[in-house]
Length: 451
Image (tube, rainbow, N blue to C red):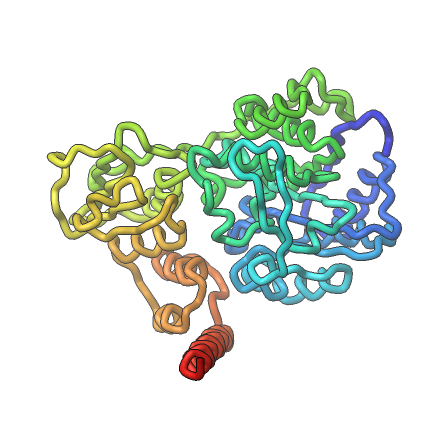
């Protein structure tokens, strides 16, 4: 690669895979990237958006970049699929035609079911070891494709934050609290991107990561110095890079300055035209007169229970009035018992509030599963649950898919939804696993009886 590492801004007016591919080729060539014979791993922001352009990295953008990489004759290309179904990106916004086109250039790695290997961060701030797909650990070139958008957990969705999608859902939730930025810095320490290309064609401002408002910039932003690319993207969105805690942590540890004056860009005036984004708000208090929050005075995590609750409440705040019966949320610690009032619509969230679990519907976890938070809230506040959603739940479909379906029914979101064939496949898989588990128990019992 060229010695001077520029952050390059390329005008990209729309989502057309062919046009994106040509621009990606030019940006990689400008930095002297050579991928011949290399094993390439591609990671993108896979937040579900129901056919909206401002939430996750657009499928056409991913396809275009992958086809640009394929033209450079690598030994292999693997694309991570971090969604629950983990099969040809069926849990993302890719259509069947798009998934099929992507599959002609790359192999899809289902993160939830992938064979995992360990990578380590030494020294670490929060987490020393991570379980990642073997294909990721063994790759020669790692390229991240984040979406430029605000994020209530991390200020903005950087390429470093996108690395959470390398982990299975349980791994993503671990330390998803006040330690989240330290965890991201450790993940970056274990294995950092070799190249970053932002999807900044249609960006997201406001209540990211899931409930953003579209903001069109018409840009592709790329480069080989991860921190500089993330810092430049933050600056364009009107966010001071050092306000993004994980970038500040990495900058201090790696001695890489993230002030925009130290970042070489092309064209030279690319950073002069800032377009300040509306920031995400994580507070859950005083949002609605029908909602009462009983919060702890100390343990009250913006990246943990509180932030996850705010994310799940967003559709109600935007699209629907709270029922007259209201909603009470108990979260954090310490909590003064005299403030507790027993009521039907009470949600108790997280390990810190466990002492009050009998006061309402309790969701365990530190932090709780966001899909479970959303599903419980939807039940408490009243939903229009269709039969297919009930069947999905009975079959043991992943919680996030069930929550998606309930939310769509409740708020009139247009989506394809979960199919009966998929429900049947999930049920069959669960039954098969249960049968194998029972067989192992029987064999152990028989072996024990003969000893």
